[in-house]
Image 1 (cartoon, rainbow, N blue to C red):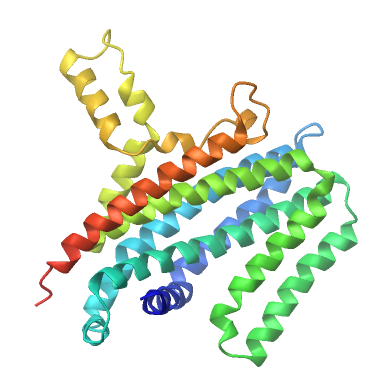
Image 2 (cartoon, one colour):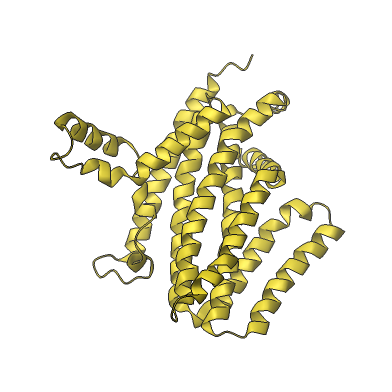
Length: 310
């Protein structure tokens, strides 16, 4: 079973990496990373902080965008191109196929996030006082390595981005020791963003199991907006809203995932919140994300098994 799920996941990753819209989003995200240098230049000795704060925000936004686009369109694309039928004709269950699509989406976002975080950490290292030649050398070496590998070995034009993103992240972590605070913010922030993306991708997979790409995208975006405002919905002031709206808000807040916990304030990311133990916080957010993901995929599998494609 694991081999079949892995095969579907890698195939989903391959299709996603080749999509032009994903390449465009990646290009914009990397451009934002470099733009943060310009913004930081206008601050007084706070350039690294600007890079990390803007970087965490961009990772969250672009990660969610990638998850929604891939999760909502990947399944429908295979239906439209009729490639789903020969796959399901093989000894593979629909549930395995759906989980594989989800894991492929998550792998794509993880590669994207790892590369972006690596670039941001290298920028923070350069700003923080690390040798500029060392930082530039590490970045250029990674780019040249993936370019040569893709030229010499065709399969690496797709799968080579996985080790390349890991290498970028490793270089960034190693060289950003001169800015430990910003490194922590970026690593913790990107980790929470990945957990949130896991839930969003699960919602997209759930809606895609029975709906069209456009409607799946709209519904997933709606769940994102509601989840990001779950705490506010639970605390609607009765002074400004009728009682039935406040009751409805509390009810909605209880049945949707609270995504605000994945975008906390900077003091928590930096480990400066005195009333929050960061490892415990990360543990509970991980359990929260896993529970929602498993539940959504279970329901999506139940629906997908009963779907008639003819």
